[in-house]
Figure 1 (cartoon, helix red, strand yellow):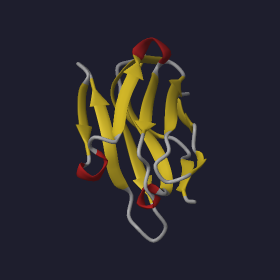
Figure 2 (spheres, one colour; figure 1 turned 45 degrees about the vertical axis):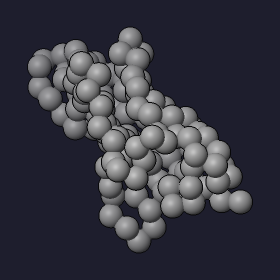
Figure 3 (tube, one colour; figure 1 turned 180 degrees about the vertical axis):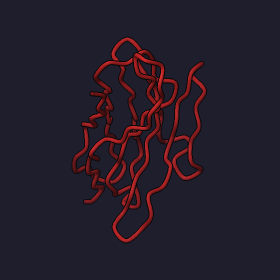
Figure 4 (spheres, one colour; figure 1 turned 30 degrees about the vertical axis):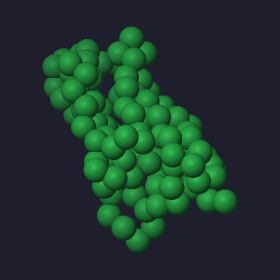
Length: 120
């Protein structure tokens, strides 16, 4: 059974940094896409950053220049390095992976989320 697990959230002061990790496990043959999303209280879930095969990356406008998405394919892990954090970055951060199973079927898998709180 495939699953995705996030880690690395926590409390940080404005201007600080955090690195989130997202690891997929199970019987897989590939992960062509991984993305980070976030949901603040009372708001809809929004896209933060994505990375696809060929290291093609995308960032939402409000995180460009501050966040960096990367991946280690050998570890089935994606990272989100977050610098210059602002209070408005406070949210639950979710990882999503488009994963190809060993039979060739594709599925979208979400992690349980990790809380990021930016506050002094």
